[in-house]
Length: 103
Image (cartoon, rainbow, N blue to C red; front, side, top):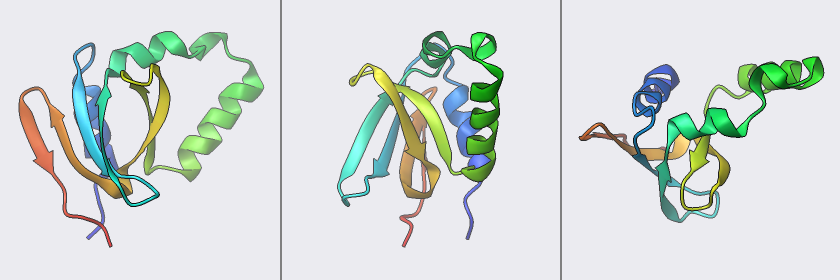
């Protein structure tokens, strides 16, 4: 069964300025629970002020990697990527959404 990346993205974005939690399996096989603040990301990237080349690279990256979402990691105080293929749960707006472990 394929995962609905759009729905997962919408869940995370729905937190806006509030915190949400994403639990996922890292590349090394360990589980990690990341605290995310979706609205903070827009203050840390250039957006409209970015060069045309940077905007193009961003769009290509987004098209080639629909399973990845850049987020603001509160604990690390930096931008990280969430790989939707390895997400186990998303806790947002008082609700917990669980996903079957991917093989």
